[in-house]
Length: 187
Image (cartoon, rainbow, N blue to C red; front, side, top):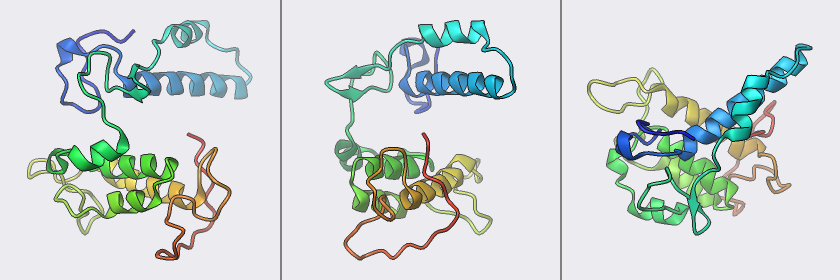
């Protein structure tokens, strides 16, 4: 269990009221499982303490089939609702590629591209490649890293993606995408 005080990735939930934040639970679980695989590749035994933590991680909180930001989160957002209702001027640069990857996996390729091209102040890149967030944070690396990952995933696919060329881009002929030497996303 991830108990308070926790500031989840969204950074807009009260730390003292946040339990079992979904992003952090998923990330800890993924990271510990990956570390165990690395140990095995090195010929080492799995770390029993890490294995205990993995086995005791709380389930990802959800309500009515939708993941919550955390267990006490009062509101849920599906992709369409988030796209319509989020205050995009208050988001962060990584929200655009995150939305694009979600949309692509849900078969909403046009929405995926629209998220990456959304004209908002937080979804722009400076000449040096950094995504701008605000005056005292001119360089925000998760935004440009997320953009690169999202475009690669949309082009090369992901585990369980439709067996078509560029599954994350619209198939209506509005995009002609060329890529090489990318592997499908494994996460």
